Length: 329
Ligand code: SAM
Ligand code: DTB
Ligand code: SF4
Image (cartoon, rainbow, N blue to C red; front, side, top):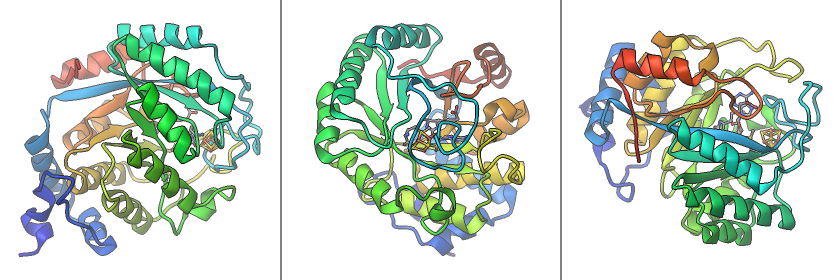
């Protein structure tokens, strides 16, 4: 019996003795019969988490649009005409008001996103002040600000930042089809700085950009084989925005999305797997499959960064129908 069939290698719970994964092994998981894959993922999910609890994070775009990077999926890139209104970095008080509202709506983590290639020194100090204030509300903090230097990562750690989101988005092989203004290695370097200074890592990708199943397997392999795999893995379904090069891309089969969630759960058993962007276009049945396959976190709130999200009222009613409780702390 192979490790994949027995599930033994995958069921170890320590990140430090986590097995390393081969691309072929991960691809073989993605290709399992659907029922076998989902059963395996759900079994592992239950070994590490309460299967009826989902963590809620709320996003806020603290600096919007006019980004110099050319990410083909992103409405905030200055390279594309998407009609997004550019907004400068928000004032700390306004960020704190949004965080209070997120807490009121049940979120336990507040994620501040900025459309930067990398933060400038004075802007980082404003973000530091925001992190300190948001933490005082009793919320976990997350930031996604683009590439960081080692010193900037340490400054954010000092401010009390809990998580840094920095997605690899897709495989190393497919990356240059999506972004030309930075490299995969740039991304890995920031992830290394974040990990080294003790901030928890939030890193995942996007499904539906025209990548192959092999690319999806390679992304998951890279994430699972990091020296310590991410504590949080967002799996986004591409939100197609008119004006971006990926508007009109062929949409993947919904079951392929569920498979990707399942393999993420199997290869990173103790990570929070976030069913991220794209929920506004998903039906309740697909979301339920994602939770069964191992997703245990969502973005909650009417907006993601610039696009719409499922409404809080709809999420509450879906959770009630499924008997899911939002995580409280
Ligand atoms: N500028 C920073 C960066 O790129 O790391 C932070 C903000 S950026 C918007 C954060 C992440 O949002 C991207 O890495 C990408 O995974 C995701 N994202 C952006 N546009 C998206 C879209 N249209 N659909 C799904 N995910 C998207
Ligand atoms: C992540 O993986 N997805 C979020 C968060 N991390 C920053 C962003 C999704 C953005 C979707 C497009 C938008 O609203 O602009
Ligand atoms: Fe800029 Fe981030 Fe959007 Fe890329 S994903 S264009 S870096 S905001």
